[in-house]
Length: 60
Image 1 (cartoon, rainbow, N blue to C red):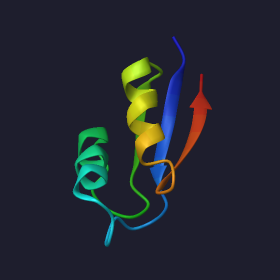
Image 2: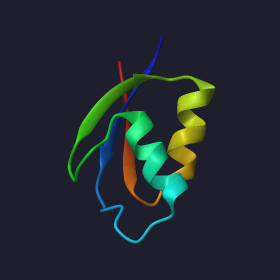
Image 3: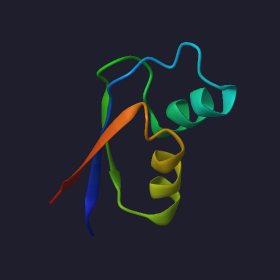
């Protein structure tokens, strides 16, 4: 199964509480944190919610 490398590239200061909670659920705590998650619809939805704060790369 494919995997996604999610990197937080912008600060969540000033963003909505929902966006902060989503970043925390993804496992991102601070700027430049990186997590690798399985490519599932749930993860894609969370990334879509905070797309302005993160970058995503596909990893094999």
